[in-house]
Image (tube, rainbow over all chains, first blue to last red; front, side, top):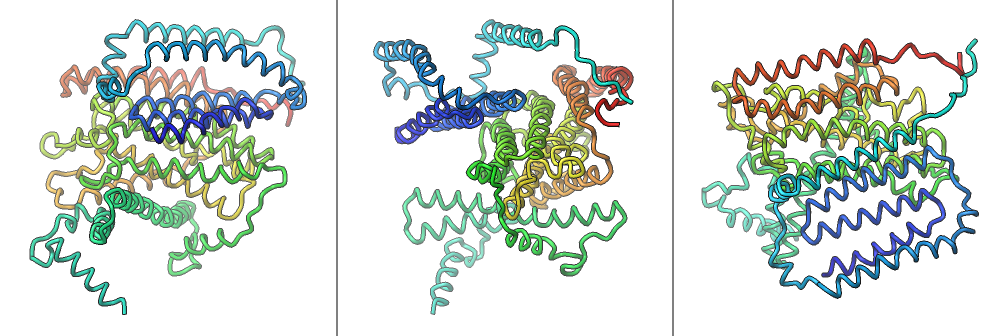
Length: 171
Length: 422
């Protein structure tokens, strides 16, 4: 309980910072901090595997991808970004509120009691692997196919179309 | 005045540990020697009557302090040995002014680094500029904590040791990005872009080649992987993973990828002194600059230690009759050999070009690393004997020849034409 009380305000602050910062790189780094703190939260409740994988995938993969995308694209105008802020805030709230409502509804219906948590101690990794790759193989395969499709789609989008600009003739 | 109290404490330690009574306490055997600081802190805290949580904390701090102390001294030593070895390879003398054979050179370097002016460029973001060197050192030290150094010396015996190692390793990429971006300058930015693209590309073969070991060991715990390599074939050939067909290939892929992950020559493009000054470290000076080097060398120790754990049998002795030598001595002996090979490679190969680097990772290393997974399964199901050797070698060698031929003939980068400079 104590780690939760310490971590959740930090996570909230980092997440708010990630939304609020006008500089994209700051926002991306704060997003990485948020994800890292969530990973720490997982570690403190004993879900070591998911915490470490969260760290590996979201810090090493997603955050790096975002900063790389920032590096190779042109930086936007910060003043324009600040002008857009009221509208962004409205859109953001409109997106968040239904999710929040759904979560509140779900938790009011079926809040896991502490005894239920005690009854399900942390799963060993072998058991987790068996569950994933024996009982849930169709779902894992479906996710794999989906990701491959996304990858191919991204490659199609990124494909150069039209004529390449001729490089200046050497010599 | 304090001396009698100290003597009293010491006699207390010795009598209660049973040494004075004639039986050697377990903590004074060679095997458990590295655990001595930990046991001493525990004993003193318990004698003072500290609460249990404080004893646990102190014991943990002592264990961490041992690892950090050992590897920081090794870092100081390596910085000298590296310069001497490179000098020998390049037919010069190397550092020879500070002390005999330049033995005090690390001390001189340390003093020089500490007394340099700490410069923060005016365009830099001072907080991120300060954060980057700290974030570079942190993951290396964390990763050093989970490696089993000996039969008894295993600082943090995590069940998910391997996952932990790679998870904290990803922090380095973020740190390099922060260093490059927060400097507010062009060369650091270019260096960081090179470093991140290189690390992301070479992390794949690194993890895939480690995966084949996990597949056959059936555990993610590093101590379990070492225990799995115990024993000897035919009475004298150690049952290490490197001495199997899949392990041989995976080990070589791992070594190449580890070399690239720690940004060392021939993959030191991110620093590339002759091209982009010093890459992401350009705008750093003084001790922050030293921290980058500390992070690089500690990372080199950590990844070599992981390679030894995965492929070279960890702390297992190389021959049957040599078990009387404490196991951590074998580990550090192997570490010395592996580090020397890295130095040798650094002194021998020229730096590769960025397009060669990427092609090598994606067209050569990753296919071969992926190939080791089915080959490891084949090895398991063909009985791990002569038949296994025959089948696995055939399955490995044929695609290897095809890949290298394609790599050399068709995919090799054409002679580069320079459009903008002649």
